[in-house]
Image 1 (spheres, helix red, strand yellow):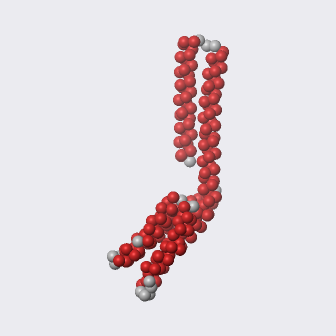
Image 2 (image 1 turned 180 degrees about the vertical axis):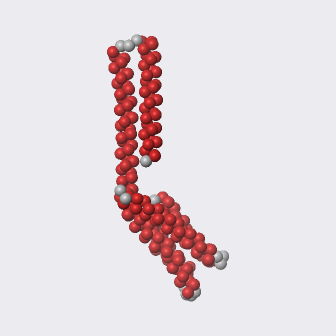
Image 3 (image 1 turned 30 degrees about the horizontal axis):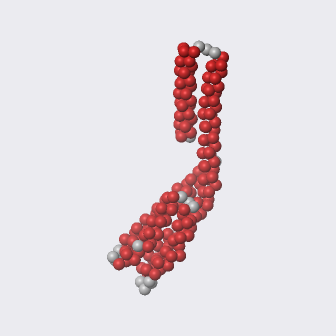
Length: 188
């Protein structure tokens, strides 16, 4: 609400400054040229055009902002659903961590490569439909997935899993923010 008030206040200030300028110009014209009906009509037409333009601008801006917000609210259920689909892919890491602890004979490098090959493209495309932040998070996650073999060669698998878990907590945070935004819309 404060943002709307600040916007309206700014437009009122702008309109006031334009009107003051117009009256100053009127005074100058009166001093040099006198008052003729044509001059008065022209100045009143100019002032009316400025006031009408400012009012039209405010109305169009308000309509555009309302439409953007409406479109976002209509897309929120799809955004939340797609975010959960991506989170399920991130959960693969936790499942793999558990599986490796209990089945050390698993070929983890091949498992990671298969996961990357089968999921990177569609998950990245899905994330691009959600938001730039989600897209960047998914790209970073799959870069991290791709680096698994390097971590394994350095004997840093635990560090790799810790960093992968951080991606999971980041997506949890994003989903929470989308769901809170959606819950706010249910109140109205």
